[in-house]
Image 1 (cartoon, rainbow over the protein chains, first blue to last red):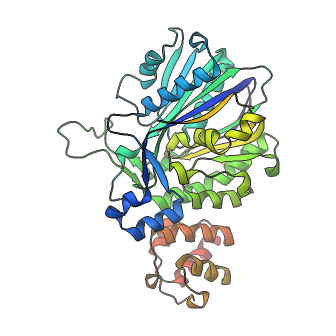
Image 2 (image 1 turned 120 degrees about the horizontal axis):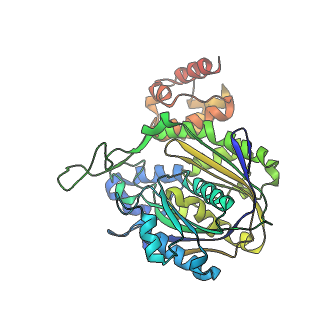
Length: 344
Length: 73
């Protein structure tokens, strides 16, 4: 691993496959009209691009979705479970305050006692953080790592908030990474601006403002859309340009720019600024909504699954948002042994 | 500023002739979606990133023009 200012290069790490899992309950935009009004729902849909989203049922969690994705991935890859020596669960919606959901999943998936398993509490940037951490573990000597990433934001939504209620969807994912000396270099850039933390926040439910059976408030997501949008315009085009430069890539050499699916209007604007033409910047927020750390795996298993299953492609993946936190990776990925979306 | 007028006309879904510096934003649908669209518009045509809260406080198109001039200075 060689460090450049603000950027890092990782060698010998291969992304073998990805499976995403979405819950069964599919909601059309009409489902929000009674509460928010037809005109407001249409206005928001025009901006965000979201037409449908999938939400969990009460009692169903991110870990449940990730478990389904992981089982399918292990089966498709034919991996011996004993060969998996690390598992990272990236989510802001874990099963419990403790223990780590990764430990619960370790038991449910029947992994070996020598496998390390831990949680990482990140959202929009979480998938890239997960890839980075998995790559670091593999560089440190592990052979195979599972990255589970996803969120179930739907129980945190205020049904009367038109900016967030129709925007978010639920999904989980599992990504298999392994050591491969022949794998191409991956270039990472990661960063943080904690001064924006309050612009996208679930205030309650942690230890500063606990929620319990006696609490009259439910933890609810709050978003200052203007501030988050301004942050994104400020940070993301520069992030994409920087990671491409790290990898020695011109914009036209990138087969696909895979960006966190936050908002269709914003993605198109970022695409223009970062010189990523629409045919190389797939958008699938229309189908799934903003699924937090699962948007990037959902692009891999939905929007670019076919080309990436056939042959290797040069990709830039970028996640950005809650924190504020961001991360991008550029390099040659694939061909993937498995890229599949499971509908529960 | 014609690019600004044309862009605002598109955001408000009105004819460009209806937009001038004197236009009152309250006469149009000056909501959070319009504000976000205007942030992107100004970023695109002026290369300037306006402060979202300051933009939300604008009452006329002239106020937006003044904000752009201030940020660009």
